Structures are given as structure tokens and as C-alpha cells.
Image (cartoon, rainbow, N blue to C red; front, side, top):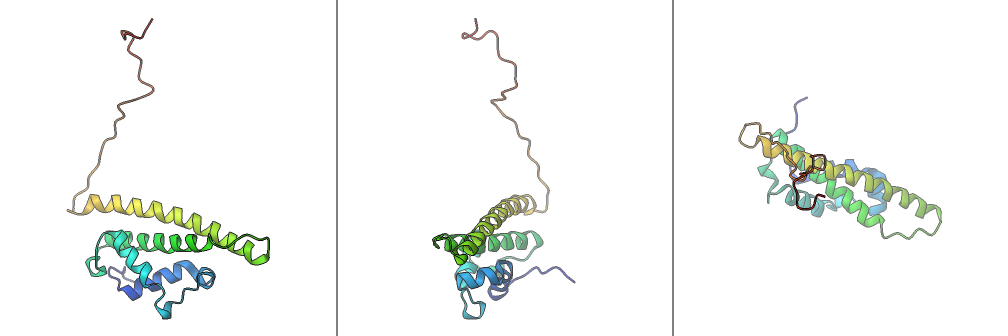
Length: 151
């Protein structure tokens, strides 16, 4: 099976719906057929950094788009399960569990967005880039003994 390199808004909405699953969709009242994912798709495309989904057509750009879609789907789930009070009933426990799961999935999606965004920056011109990291305030470096503050 070939890797999918293009998505339409409808296909991205379906992807988001599948990633959330029926438990979240039911609690959140999201119905794919009713177009309830349209705003989330728009937010994901904007998070990606473009105005139209048609601009996204390489492996790296699709990975970032899908990470942005997961991020906004789980952000929506987290925001909407926060509002349910935990009154000790069975439903409130289930919603609290959904919220906990949504928060963990949101954190994972946030990491993916960052990782794919960095990876994409390294391949936009076909080259591979690397950066050296140097700390100017290395805590393990020997202290200068000729300092005016030394005894």
C-alpha cells in the first residue's frame, strides 16, 4: 500500500474522528457526517502553517499535518471534558478518565508537532542540517580562581 501524501479536508476530518474514537466523539457530541470536525480541520491546517490543505504533499509535510490534527483533536477533547463536574457519579468518573486520557494524548501530540516541525525545517531544501549546542553557562566548568570574588 502506498503512503498517502495528500489529504482533503473531509479525509482529515475522518482521520481526526478515527483518532478520537467513538467514546470521545460521543461525549463531545461530534458527528463526522454533520460536519462537526470542520473547525478542528481548519485549526489543524492553520497550526501547520498554511491556509490551504492542498499545499501539503510530501511525507514530511503530511506527518506534520497529521500531528497538528491530532493535537487539535485532543485539545478539543481536553477542553470539553474539563467542564464536566466530578460529582462522584458513574458518568463523572468516566468523563474524568476520558479527560485524563485526552491530556496524555494531547501531550504526545504536542511532542509530535514539535518533532515533525523541526524535521521538516531540516529537509525543506533537500539537505540535512545539524546544529551543535553549546552552553555558555556550563555549571561543570572550573571556576576562574583569579576572579575578584575569590579569596
